[in-house]
Image 1 (tube, rainbow, N blue to C red):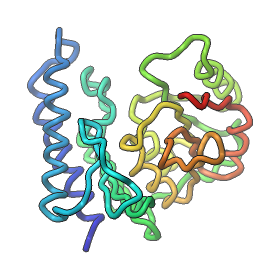
Image 2 (cartoon, helix red, strand yellow):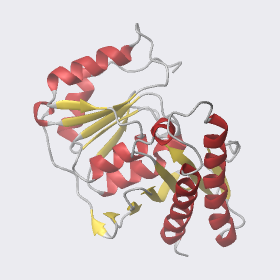
Image 3 (cartoon, one colour):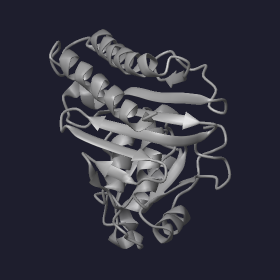
Length: 260
């Protein structure tokens, strides 16, 4: 069974729905939330239909209302039908559909599809990562001072919390830090060698499951913030091109609290 082909077909189907719905409202128009929710659901329905047509007995864990699937049992598809919602609303070209297959607690394959750029990032465990069929490779940067970094924050950032301090410390220690608003695409940019590292303390598994595998199959590392809890259970993580960069970045960052 070609699970990766299903991943890609499903992600592309979701992306097509997002582009269709994007034309139905103007950026920043008053009250587009309902339309965006409909676009999100339309994308999710398209992804789900592709998967269940081929694998009707599989479970689905998705952002929009499908949260009851068990990752540790059998095959479970993990879906984010629109990663980068705020970007999508504003017409900023940085959003994607993310689809991954988790089997018995391990990510087996994944696809992140950027419909505007027609960029299709894919990976299968043990078979490398690709962008539109071309192999991906992380940058190999080992030192934070040479690194272009990315970060993801929560929708609300506590002025007294660790996020601002982390951002400032990494900003001063690295070449630069970017916050693009799509965790899935941030991970893909690490895999492609465009970012050298990325950290996040407020993501859900559907945001990042496919991206985790894409980074790892491109030669990079993804480690849990606390060093213990598997990222598939609590996706607060550090991703880097090399173990050396991951260790240096970890030394700069304050971890999130256990409650986060």
